[in-house]
Image (cartoon, helix red, strand yellow):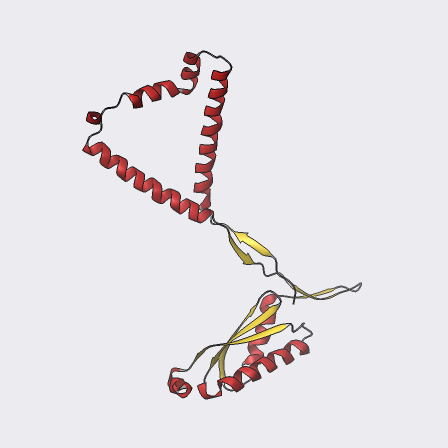
Length: 201
């Protein structure tokens, strides 16, 4: 089977996190520049006029417990909770979600031309072949990394081992008949009819 590439999927809502990150980075660069101006002996009044850092510091330093009432604490608490939930949600959406790409499978590539088959076509071949057994009522194929997985739903639970073996054989024969590299074919039982559930005991 053809190896599949991994692609990272990111939610569009991750833009919220990127905006916050950019604003924080700009603030760090800006106030780093203010520190550099102070180190270069630029008058503190000029730096304060540009950045307002001293004005903000004096305001915060001048606050007393009387200035922070119950309403202010309630507003600060609610704002902090909302900010926490928003930033946590943005951070969660920024996490990459890798998944396998589903590119076409190359069956032949020579001077005459190229023959390719879509992954869904391979899966469809496997599903039709697996349902050739009367005990199989439903089948779903999934082409993965160098392997083909076929999930079976069996109508007669008593025939599960034989049905799985026959389904795997039918799938391999169908792939060879269509010129598709068989590779690894996994057959998994995913369910059986409710009326025959007692037969497994």
